[in-house]
Length: 163
Image 1 (tube, rainbow, N blue to C red):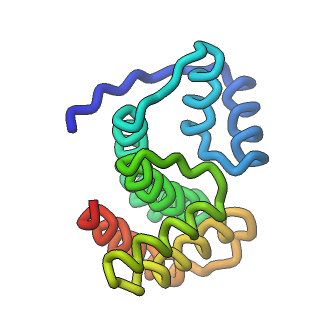
Image 2 (cartoon, helix red, strand yellow; image 1 turned 45 degrees about the horizontal axis):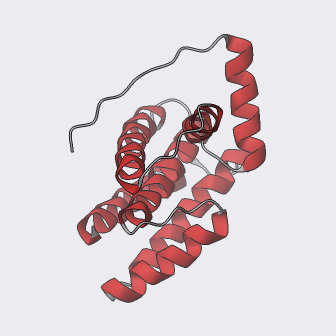
């Protein structure tokens, strides 16, 4: 997939408001930004657009997570979670589905695990949820985050093979 990306630089105050709104609504910041822009332009994204969007963001978050692992475990945790959630949303978009709630990620992971006959997917997704929780509670020591990061990379690889 040849993805063209357009970057938007926001004033600090708007960036902070977007981050806070994303956190409050359960969106990832970039995902909420696209959703708000899409709505304001009265534009629908077809499943192919969503697949491209989710794949590009997932790859970006995974690379950022690896960098944050060296210096900021809280941010690394959230980026690993984001990469996972976006990979799952990408697979759903390939089927014409749009997952918008946290619970819908669990439901879709269950479907993928059943279809692929790979129950490890469920356990590995549970690890991703632990990292998401760590973003808010900052309770995991470095070794736990590092081991979880390895599990997330395994999960993302498994999910990409399903597609």
